[in-house]
Amino acid sequence: MRWGLIGASTIAAEHMIGAIRASGGEIATVLSSSPDRAVSYAAKHDIPKGVTDLDAAMDGVDAVYISTTNEKHLPQAMAAIAAGKHVLCEKPLAMSVADAVTMVKAAQAANVTFGTNHHLRNAGSHLAIRELIATGRIGTVLSVRVFHAVHLPPHLQGWRIDNPDAGGGVIPDITVHDADTVRFHLGEDPVDVVAMKTASGMGQGVEDSAMSIWSMPSGAMVHTHESFTHRFAGSGIEVHGTEGSIIARGVMTQAPVGDVTLRFEGGEQAVEYATHGLYDRAVDLFSKACAGEGRPAADGVDGVKSLAVAAAVAKAAETGTRTAVDYGG
Ligand code: NDP
Image (tube, rainbow, N blue to C red; front, side):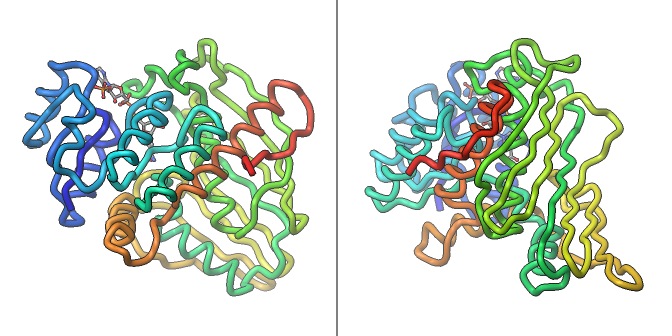
């Protein structure tokens, strides 16, 4: 499959170019808003064409991977869909749920494959956790706690910490991932949320930390904590059930790492899991879906729903009120 990269981004350089090539894909073009950067990024990553024109970036490609800043996802995805390209888009899909719904409906109408690049549901650790829950190993789920307070590395401390118009802030950046991960594990969608947010040393005009509590249709409660400012917290997820608990540490990350433990009456056991690359699996499944086989790991509807939860968290934190999640119809 021939790909165009829409955005000369860090995530493409660090993870997605390798994953696309590992899947057998060929990267034909890269789009940047800067002519110099288009050329230098293309040269550095051995991409034949670096361009500043979106049509030129889509010329002769089957699929685009959109990893520009968040406010650009909508117009770029709509143009790609109109040109008949398959779209793998970064999270959050857009700046609003309504815009994300527009993109996903347009892709459905044009009969192109649309994927959202939620990497965590591709991790062997998370696939193992989901399997434990689905096969009843912890009984009925009572609650989930997500620890996703990290320290944003200096090279990513640009628009994320000071530009709300580009989609900055920890809620669009990390809460969306937690929403997708919880939906993936529990197989249900949060109903309503309460939340608080703050700036704790990094955010300038955007929040760099958030905590929220979500109610689930089953009655399970979910508690999540996201931050850019925590150097030593480590990440993790715990899923507590009537017959056992899953304690996973170091798994809310981009690499296939971390420890998963199943705790039950009378003991606990380490859970083995596959250690394939998260982005490799995401690209593989997306590519197969484009060829008519299966579906992307996270599709457009998943991307709409993760954004809807994050938008409800943002609104709840803003207003101080319990807020229903609006999935956009
Ligand atoms: P970057 O800041 O690296 O890239 C975003 C844009 O910033 C690029 O498209 C590029 O613009 C510009 N840019 C990047 N580096 C430079 C530079 N050195 N000098 C000048 N301009 C630069 O963002 P990320 O790669 O971290 O994030 C991009 C998207 O991917 C976001 O939507 C984010 O939410 C998502 N993301 C998803 C992850 C996941 O695991 N699913 C992980 C990380 C990010 P131009 O293209 O115009 O050159």
